[in-house]
Image (tube, rainbow, N blue to C red; front, side, top):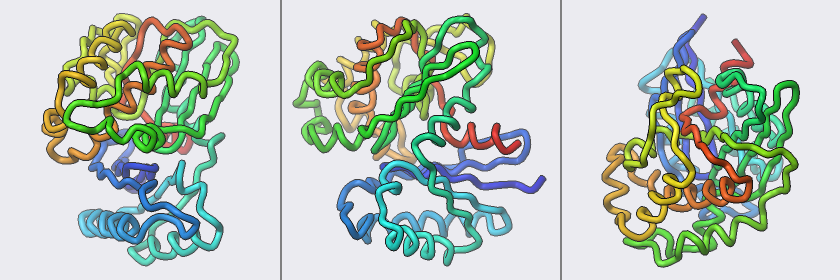
Length: 295
């Protein structure tokens, strides 16, 4: 099978993965705040230029590799005319397949990315917080329930612009209060949640109290964290860790850390509401589900 380059295009970041069966590897990530300057005309020209330049650099490094872009969140809000213009611009970079993913498909891919990882008869919650939308999936032994929320990291940053001051001027509890009423009601009692989208890397870099995963063996999920320890470190990152310190943890893409406080607060609100006891941080995301569905 030929090598592929798969791109997860979200509201605030672009993640490029190389796939050469059976190996899927994150090649690079770039933070682009597509929600900033977004209007009926689509994403801003600055962000569009940044995206096209990013794709050109990737093409120059991988000239003979097939590219596939999977777009979500804010890109679903583009009008057909604006979307066509964007796709035309992307395809001028080279032979790049573009696919707009619906909320239902995104939840399906999230479930596919993680299904079977933890064999249990108990329900499991899958959490995927994006820049502009969030997917929650309750996986039972023989069924699953999907919840799509039109709220993401970008929404929180827009509501609380002071969250990214040197130390956050908005408290963690205030952000949780903002998020909680917007979460859906669920019937299942869930104790364990997969928290996906680069969170294993983030929690490792940011010195969260991770423990060895003794629930199941999987090289992609070596660690777990108790919700009370997650909350404790979140509080410290809001009030005791500077934004510059967070940025220094990811020198190749420091802008990614501008979503760290907002995303963690969102996740804590979810865990609080549904009384989650244990979190399994995961780097899996939509692309992992795409691979499992295709191959």
